[in-house]
Image 1 (cartoon, rainbow, N blue to C red):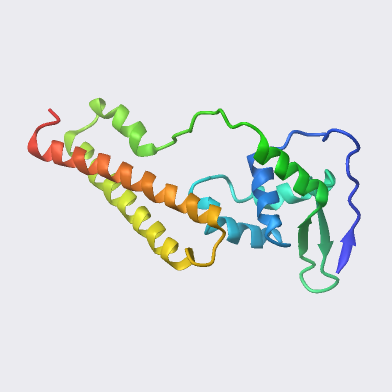
Image 2 (cartoon, one colour):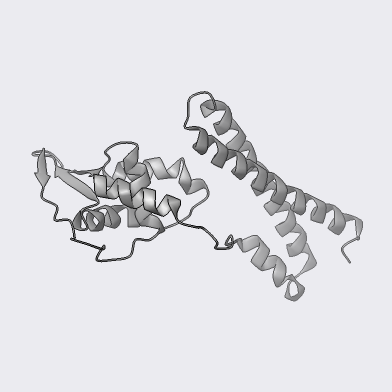
Length: 191
């Protein structure tokens, strides 16, 4: 492996880090990874509740290397993959972010909720189908989270388990909303 030199930026960081930056730093805190490895790790963990373009996982590590927050090493032969590792400066940046206040409101970007908001301009049959589909989707996701919880609860990081438990509660709550709405639509109580 050839290690690429990284030139940490002296003093305050040259650019503001974003959520993707912290996802990469957090994932690299678990161990070195290629961009492909990061994509896989994110896919079965934080990707369940933090959506973003996976192409960012290929671009962001290089930017973090330029900032001195990660290092990159390249395979000498073969596919010449880059493997990234977090630096002490990267760990410090992650800790600083974790310690910062988080007053922002939760952002909800749910296409079903958006369609429900404008449902007055559509057909009732489409609304019933929307409610059933969303109920089933949230039930399926909650069931998947529960299965994942059962697989990892005894050995995973306890805070990752707590994150998964919150995901289960959110999905069950939203599933319950849509299930009640289906009942209201089917009994005429929603009219």
